[in-house]
Amino acid sequence: QLTLTSASLDNSQSGRIASKGLVLSTGAFDNHQDGRLTSTG
Image (cartoon, rainbow, N blue to C red):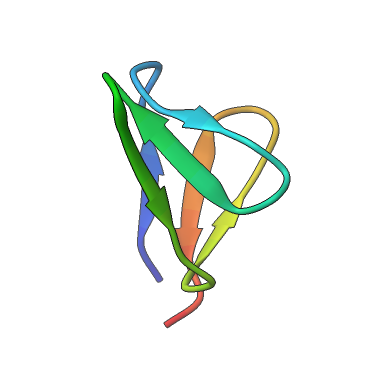
């Protein structure tokens, strides 16, 4: 299990990851409201 904590990522509840203009939409990450990213794959 991989957990990434970064303030540079804006994790929305829809599963999108926005970082400096880059938007990544994936179901492989469980985005918590506290900013952690947990890999579900």
